[in-house]
Image (cartoon, rainbow, N blue to C red; front, side, top):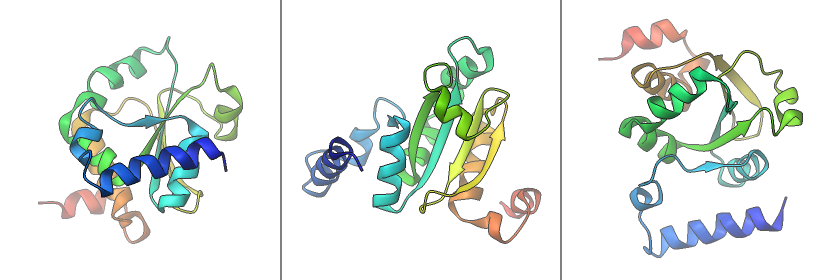
Length: 155
């Protein structure tokens, strides 16, 4: 584990604990994106699931997700509260993209607290579809039912 990652995690955790910043302030500007290695390490140390967004600067659907989905207040709040959010540029981090066999873009992956892949969802996801997907993964409903059953059970 990188010393820088541990220091960053402890600093943020310390500031939250002593009340210097609130969780809302921490994410006021948007999703708290981290680089892959830092996010994976933080997910394991905090025992939180990791959400990985694979994108490319030339990808039009990736840009749409940045502009729409990842600017939605409910998506921002849910991601920041329940996941460690990681953003990976596939052109700059080819080795990371290769680990997940990324194609097509955009592609989002969900990683367990132990660092194991839960699954992925390729393609553009609008905000109104992203929130139920996040809840399905976070609540571990995927262990008990299909996604459609989960959607049907929601009020």
